[in-house]
Image 1 (cartoon, rainbow, N blue to C red):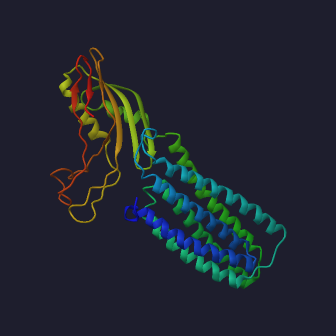
Image 2: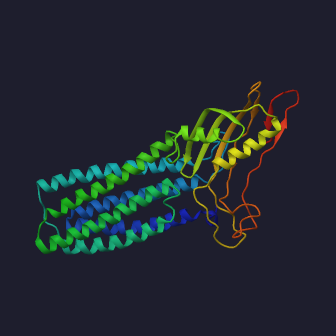
Length: 351
Protein backbone atom coordinates (compact mmCIF):
# COMPACT_ATOMS: atom_id res chain seq x y z
CA UNK A 1 0.00 0.00 0.00
CA UNK A 2 1.44 3.35 -0.99
CA UNK A 3 1.03 6.56 0.91
CA UNK A 4 -1.73 7.62 -1.47
CA UNK A 5 -3.56 4.40 -0.61
CA UNK A 6 -3.49 5.17 3.12
CA UNK A 7 -7.08 5.65 4.34
CA UNK A 8 -8.05 9.08 5.76
CA UNK A 9 -8.17 7.66 9.29
CA UNK A 10 -4.56 6.47 8.86
CA UNK A 11 -3.33 9.90 7.81
CA UNK A 12 -5.11 11.47 10.76
CA UNK A 13 -3.49 8.97 13.11
CA UNK A 14 -0.03 9.87 11.76
CA UNK A 15 -0.72 13.57 12.37
CA UNK A 16 -1.98 12.75 15.87
CA UNK A 17 1.16 10.69 16.56
CA UNK A 18 3.43 13.63 15.74
CA UNK A 19 1.53 16.10 17.93
CA UNK A 20 1.26 13.64 20.81
CA UNK A 21 5.00 12.91 20.72
CA UNK A 22 5.77 16.62 21.04
CA UNK A 23 3.45 17.16 24.00
CA UNK A 24 4.80 14.05 25.74
CA UNK A 25 8.32 15.49 25.74
CA UNK A 26 7.04 18.81 27.10
CA UNK A 27 4.97 17.27 29.90
CA UNK A 28 7.70 14.90 31.10
CA UNK A 29 10.16 17.79 31.30
CA UNK A 30 7.58 20.03 32.98
CA UNK A 31 6.49 17.38 35.47
CA UNK A 32 10.05 16.62 36.58
CA UNK A 33 10.83 20.32 36.86
CA UNK A 34 7.73 21.31 38.87
CA UNK A 35 7.31 18.08 40.89
CA UNK A 36 3.61 17.92 39.97
CA UNK A 37 1.93 14.51 40.19
CA UNK A 38 -1.00 15.82 38.15
CA UNK A 39 1.36 16.82 35.35
CA UNK A 40 3.33 13.56 35.50
CA UNK A 41 0.03 11.63 35.55
CA UNK A 42 -0.99 13.53 32.47
CA UNK A 43 2.38 12.71 30.88
CA UNK A 44 1.85 9.01 31.64
CA UNK A 45 -1.52 9.21 29.94
CA UNK A 46 0.05 10.96 26.95
CA UNK A 47 2.65 8.20 26.70
CA UNK A 48 -0.15 5.65 26.57
CA UNK A 49 -1.86 7.84 23.98
CA UNK A 50 1.28 7.53 21.89
CA UNK A 51 1.27 3.74 22.23
CA UNK A 52 -2.46 3.61 21.51
CA UNK A 53 -2.15 5.76 18.40
CA UNK A 54 0.79 3.70 17.13
CA UNK A 55 -1.04 0.43 17.77
CA UNK A 56 -4.17 1.78 16.11
CA UNK A 57 -2.25 2.91 13.04
CA UNK A 58 -0.50 -0.46 12.61
CA UNK A 59 -3.79 -2.33 13.07
CA UNK A 60 -5.54 -0.01 10.60
CA UNK A 61 -2.92 -0.68 7.94
CA UNK A 62 -2.96 -4.45 8.52
CA UNK A 63 -6.78 -4.48 8.38
CA UNK A 64 -6.63 -3.40 4.73
CA UNK A 65 -4.90 -6.64 3.74
CA UNK A 66 -7.14 -8.88 1.60
CA UNK A 67 -8.56 -12.18 2.92
CA UNK A 68 -6.46 -15.30 2.42
CA UNK A 69 -6.92 -19.05 2.82
CA UNK A 70 -6.41 -18.87 6.59
CA UNK A 71 -8.22 -15.57 7.26
CA UNK A 72 -11.36 -15.69 5.14
CA UNK A 73 -12.87 -12.54 6.66
CA UNK A 74 -9.63 -10.62 6.23
CA UNK A 75 -7.84 -8.89 9.10
CA UNK A 76 -10.57 -6.52 10.30
CA UNK A 77 -10.45 -7.84 13.85
CA UNK A 78 -6.87 -6.71 14.31
CA UNK A 79 -8.40 -3.30 14.95
CA UNK A 80 -10.60 -4.77 17.69
CA UNK A 81 -7.56 -6.46 19.24
CA UNK A 82 -5.74 -3.12 19.17
CA UNK A 83 -8.70 -1.50 20.92
CA UNK A 84 -8.62 -4.26 23.55
CA UNK A 85 -4.90 -3.62 24.16
CA UNK A 86 -5.51 0.12 24.40
CA UNK A 87 -8.31 -0.39 26.91
CA UNK A 88 -6.09 -2.63 29.03
CA UNK A 89 -3.29 -0.04 29.12
CA UNK A 90 -5.79 2.64 30.12
CA UNK A 91 -6.86 0.47 33.05
CA UNK A 92 -3.27 -0.09 34.19
CA UNK A 93 -2.33 3.59 34.07
CA UNK A 94 -5.43 4.52 36.11
CA UNK A 95 -4.41 2.07 38.84
CA UNK A 96 -0.86 3.48 38.80
CA UNK A 97 -2.16 7.03 39.23
CA UNK A 98 -4.33 6.00 42.18
CA UNK A 99 -1.32 4.45 43.91
CA UNK A 100 0.88 7.52 43.37
CA UNK A 101 -1.91 9.84 44.54
CA UNK A 102 -2.15 7.89 47.80
CA UNK A 103 1.59 8.37 48.33
CA UNK A 104 1.24 12.12 47.71
CA UNK A 105 -1.65 12.39 50.17
CA UNK A 106 0.45 10.56 52.77
CA UNK A 107 3.63 12.56 52.08
CA UNK A 108 2.76 16.00 50.59
CA UNK A 109 5.37 17.64 48.38
CA UNK A 110 5.75 21.20 47.14
CA UNK A 111 4.59 21.97 43.60
CA UNK A 112 5.75 24.78 41.27
CA UNK A 113 2.29 25.93 40.21
CA UNK A 114 3.35 28.55 37.64
CA UNK A 115 5.39 26.34 35.27
CA UNK A 116 2.90 23.51 35.87
CA UNK A 117 0.10 25.76 34.63
CA UNK A 118 1.99 26.82 31.49
CA UNK A 119 2.80 23.26 30.44
CA UNK A 120 -0.78 22.14 31.12
CA UNK A 121 -2.22 24.90 28.91
CA UNK A 122 0.04 23.86 26.04
CA UNK A 123 -0.90 20.23 26.60
CA UNK A 124 -4.62 21.02 26.56
CA UNK A 125 -4.34 22.92 23.27
CA UNK A 126 -2.47 20.08 21.57
CA UNK A 127 -4.77 17.38 22.96
CA UNK A 128 -7.85 19.23 21.75
CA UNK A 129 -6.29 19.53 18.29
CA UNK A 130 -5.56 15.79 18.18
CA UNK A 131 -9.07 14.95 19.45
CA UNK A 132 -10.63 17.05 16.70
CA UNK A 133 -8.46 15.29 14.11
CA UNK A 134 -9.68 11.85 15.26
CA UNK A 135 -13.29 12.84 16.00
CA UNK A 136 -14.49 12.34 12.42
CA UNK A 137 -13.73 8.60 12.43
CA UNK A 138 -14.42 7.55 16.01
CA UNK A 139 -17.99 6.33 15.34
CA UNK A 140 -16.99 4.06 12.45
CA UNK A 141 -14.05 2.24 13.99
CA UNK A 142 -13.65 0.89 17.53
CA UNK A 143 -9.89 1.00 17.07
CA UNK A 144 -9.89 4.73 16.21
CA UNK A 145 -12.51 5.33 18.91
CA UNK A 146 -10.21 3.82 21.55
CA UNK A 147 -7.42 6.13 20.40
CA UNK A 148 -9.85 9.06 20.43
CA UNK A 149 -10.89 8.24 24.01
CA UNK A 150 -7.23 8.13 25.01
CA UNK A 151 -6.72 11.63 23.65
CA UNK A 152 -10.03 13.00 24.94
CA UNK A 153 -9.26 11.69 28.41
CA UNK A 154 -5.88 13.35 28.23
CA UNK A 155 -7.47 16.66 27.21
CA UNK A 156 -9.72 16.45 30.27
CA UNK A 157 -6.65 15.58 32.33
CA UNK A 158 -4.86 18.69 31.08
CA UNK A 159 -7.91 20.78 31.98
CA UNK A 160 -7.80 19.29 35.49
CA UNK A 161 -4.11 20.12 35.79
CA UNK A 162 -4.87 23.72 34.80
CA UNK A 163 -7.54 24.00 37.50
CA UNK A 164 -5.17 22.46 40.05
CA UNK A 165 -2.40 24.85 39.03
CA UNK A 166 -4.65 27.89 39.45
CA UNK A 167 -5.89 26.70 42.87
CA UNK A 168 -2.36 25.96 44.13
CA UNK A 169 -1.10 29.28 42.78
CA UNK A 170 -3.85 31.21 44.60
CA UNK A 171 -4.11 29.21 47.85
CA UNK A 172 -0.95 27.14 48.22
CA UNK A 173 -3.01 23.96 48.79
CA UNK A 174 -0.63 21.27 47.56
CA UNK A 175 -3.16 18.49 48.28
CA UNK A 176 -5.15 19.68 45.26
CA UNK A 177 -2.45 18.15 43.04
CA UNK A 178 -2.94 14.48 44.10
CA UNK A 179 -6.72 15.04 44.22
CA UNK A 180 -6.58 16.11 40.59
CA UNK A 181 -4.55 12.99 39.86
CA UNK A 182 -7.33 10.84 41.34
CA UNK A 183 -9.95 12.61 39.20
CA UNK A 184 -7.81 12.04 36.11
CA UNK A 185 -7.51 8.38 37.05
CA UNK A 186 -11.30 8.08 37.30
CA UNK A 187 -11.72 9.60 33.84
CA UNK A 188 -9.20 7.16 32.42
CA UNK A 189 -10.89 4.26 34.20
CA UNK A 190 -14.29 5.14 32.73
CA UNK A 191 -12.88 5.33 29.21
CA UNK A 192 -11.09 2.00 29.52
CA UNK A 193 -14.29 0.33 30.73
CA UNK A 194 -16.24 1.41 27.66
CA UNK A 195 -13.57 0.30 25.21
CA UNK A 196 -12.94 -3.04 26.93
CA UNK A 197 -16.65 -3.82 27.15
CA UNK A 198 -17.26 -3.29 23.43
CA UNK A 199 -14.06 -5.03 22.35
CA UNK A 200 -14.88 -8.12 24.44
CA UNK A 201 -18.44 -8.10 23.09
CA UNK A 202 -17.18 -8.17 19.49
CA UNK A 203 -14.46 -10.76 20.11
CA UNK A 204 -17.05 -13.00 21.81
CA UNK A 205 -19.14 -12.68 18.61
CA UNK A 206 -21.95 -10.74 20.23
CA UNK A 207 -24.98 -9.34 18.41
CA UNK A 208 -24.49 -5.99 16.66
CA UNK A 209 -26.04 -2.99 18.36
CA UNK A 210 -29.09 -3.68 20.50
CA UNK A 211 -30.48 -6.45 18.31
CA UNK A 212 -31.51 -9.81 19.74
CA UNK A 213 -31.65 -13.14 17.91
CA UNK A 214 -35.39 -13.45 18.56
CA UNK A 215 -36.02 -10.07 16.91
CA UNK A 216 -34.05 -11.09 13.83
CA UNK A 217 -35.76 -14.49 13.58
CA UNK A 218 -39.21 -12.95 13.92
CA UNK A 219 -38.43 -10.40 11.21
CA UNK A 220 -37.23 -13.19 8.90
CA UNK A 221 -40.43 -15.18 9.48
CA UNK A 222 -42.49 -12.20 8.36
CA UNK A 223 -40.91 -12.36 4.90
CA UNK A 224 -43.36 -13.91 2.42
CA UNK A 225 -42.51 -17.55 1.69
CA UNK A 226 -40.56 -18.21 4.90
CA UNK A 227 -42.08 -20.95 7.08
CA UNK A 228 -39.43 -21.37 9.79
CA UNK A 229 -35.98 -20.10 10.76
CA UNK A 230 -33.50 -22.10 12.80
CA UNK A 231 -29.75 -22.32 13.44
CA UNK A 232 -29.71 -18.52 13.41
CA UNK A 233 -26.43 -16.79 14.21
CA UNK A 234 -25.76 -13.06 14.05
CA UNK A 235 -22.43 -11.62 15.07
CA UNK A 236 -20.19 -8.60 14.68
CA UNK A 237 -16.92 -9.03 12.81
CA UNK A 238 -15.87 -5.45 13.46
CA UNK A 239 -17.94 -2.27 14.06
CA UNK A 240 -19.94 -1.56 10.90
CA UNK A 241 -19.46 -5.11 9.55
CA UNK A 242 -22.05 -7.61 10.80
CA UNK A 243 -22.69 -11.17 9.64
CA UNK A 244 -25.70 -13.47 9.69
CA UNK A 245 -26.13 -17.18 9.02
CA UNK A 246 -29.33 -19.21 9.27
CA UNK A 247 -31.30 -22.16 7.95
CA UNK A 248 -34.56 -20.97 6.41
CA UNK A 249 -37.42 -23.43 5.72
CA UNK A 250 -39.65 -22.30 2.85
CA UNK A 251 -43.32 -22.98 2.40
CA UNK A 252 -44.33 -25.46 -0.31
CA UNK A 253 -43.66 -23.55 -3.50
CA UNK A 254 -41.73 -23.81 -6.74
CA UNK A 255 -37.98 -23.40 -6.50
CA UNK A 256 -38.28 -20.62 -9.04
CA UNK A 257 -39.74 -18.50 -6.24
CA UNK A 258 -36.71 -18.99 -4.02
CA UNK A 259 -35.02 -15.93 -5.47
CA UNK A 260 -38.05 -13.82 -4.57
CA UNK A 261 -37.79 -14.96 -0.95
CA UNK A 262 -34.06 -14.29 -1.03
CA UNK A 263 -34.71 -10.78 -2.34
CA UNK A 264 -37.19 -10.20 0.49
CA UNK A 265 -34.63 -11.24 3.07
CA UNK A 266 -32.04 -8.95 1.50
CA UNK A 267 -34.50 -6.07 1.61
CA UNK A 268 -35.29 -6.73 5.26
CA UNK A 269 -31.80 -7.11 6.67
CA UNK A 270 -29.25 -5.31 4.52
CA UNK A 271 -29.71 -1.79 5.79
CA UNK A 272 -26.67 0.46 6.18
CA UNK A 273 -26.56 2.49 9.37
CA UNK A 274 -25.19 5.50 7.53
CA UNK A 275 -25.51 6.82 4.03
CA UNK A 276 -23.44 9.53 2.42
CA UNK A 277 -22.65 10.61 -1.08
CA UNK A 278 -19.92 13.24 -0.95
CA UNK A 279 -18.09 14.69 -3.89
CA UNK A 280 -19.01 14.67 -7.58
CA UNK A 281 -21.80 12.51 -9.04
CA UNK A 282 -19.26 9.82 -9.94
CA UNK A 283 -18.38 9.24 -6.29
CA UNK A 284 -18.93 5.68 -5.08
CA UNK A 285 -21.85 5.24 -2.72
CA UNK A 286 -20.69 4.50 0.81
CA UNK A 287 -22.78 1.85 2.52
CA UNK A 288 -22.16 -0.57 5.37
CA UNK A 289 -22.39 -4.21 4.26
CA UNK A 290 -23.96 -7.12 6.07
CA UNK A 291 -22.73 -10.57 5.16
CA UNK A 292 -25.49 -13.19 5.03
CA UNK A 293 -25.08 -16.95 4.76
CA UNK A 294 -28.47 -18.61 4.31
CA UNK A 295 -29.52 -22.18 3.58
CA UNK A 296 -33.00 -22.73 2.20
CA UNK A 297 -35.19 -25.82 2.56
CA UNK A 298 -38.47 -26.79 0.94
CA UNK A 299 -41.22 -27.94 3.25
CA UNK A 300 -42.18 -31.07 1.27
CA UNK A 301 -38.85 -32.88 1.01
CA UNK A 302 -36.43 -30.52 2.78
CA UNK A 303 -34.11 -30.51 -0.22
CA UNK A 304 -31.42 -27.98 0.50
CA UNK A 305 -30.59 -24.90 -1.49
CA UNK A 306 -26.96 -24.07 -0.83
CA UNK A 307 -26.43 -20.35 -0.70
CA UNK A 308 -22.93 -18.99 -0.92
CA UNK A 309 -21.63 -16.26 1.35
CA UNK A 310 -22.24 -12.88 -0.21
CA UNK A 311 -21.87 -9.27 0.83
CA UNK A 312 -25.18 -7.47 0.42
CA UNK A 313 -26.07 -3.80 0.24
CA UNK A 314 -29.33 -1.94 0.60
CA UNK A 315 -29.92 1.65 -0.44
CA UNK A 316 -32.12 4.00 1.59
CA UNK A 317 -35.47 5.17 0.31
CA UNK A 318 -35.20 7.12 -2.91
CA UNK A 319 -31.68 5.90 -3.66
CA UNK A 320 -30.20 3.05 -5.63
CA UNK A 321 -29.97 2.21 -9.35
CA UNK A 322 -31.94 4.72 -11.38
CA UNK A 323 -33.42 6.36 -8.28
CA UNK A 324 -30.66 8.32 -6.62
CA UNK A 325 -30.75 11.90 -7.84
CA UNK A 326 -27.65 12.94 -5.90
CA UNK A 327 -25.22 10.35 -7.25
CA UNK A 328 -27.00 8.78 -10.23
CA UNK A 329 -24.08 7.40 -12.19
CA UNK A 330 -22.56 4.75 -9.92
CA UNK A 331 -24.10 2.34 -7.47
CA UNK A 332 -23.00 -0.57 -5.33
CA UNK A 333 -24.99 -3.78 -5.64
CA UNK A 334 -24.73 -7.53 -5.21
CA UNK A 335 -26.41 -10.24 -7.28
CA UNK A 336 -26.64 -14.03 -7.10
CA UNK A 337 -28.03 -16.73 -9.41
CA UNK A 338 -29.42 -20.22 -8.92
CA UNK A 339 -28.27 -23.18 -10.96
CA UNK A 340 -29.20 -26.85 -10.92
CA UNK A 341 -26.36 -29.23 -10.14
CA UNK A 342 -26.16 -32.13 -12.69
CA UNK A 343 -27.43 -35.36 -11.15
CA UNK A 344 -28.32 -33.62 -7.90
CA UNK A 345 -31.87 -32.58 -6.93
CA UNK A 346 -30.50 -29.78 -4.77
CA UNK A 347 -29.78 -26.34 -6.10
CA UNK A 348 -26.70 -24.25 -5.48
CA UNK A 349 -25.68 -20.67 -5.87
CA UNK A 350 -23.37 -19.59 -8.69
CA UNK A 351 -19.95 -18.51 -7.53
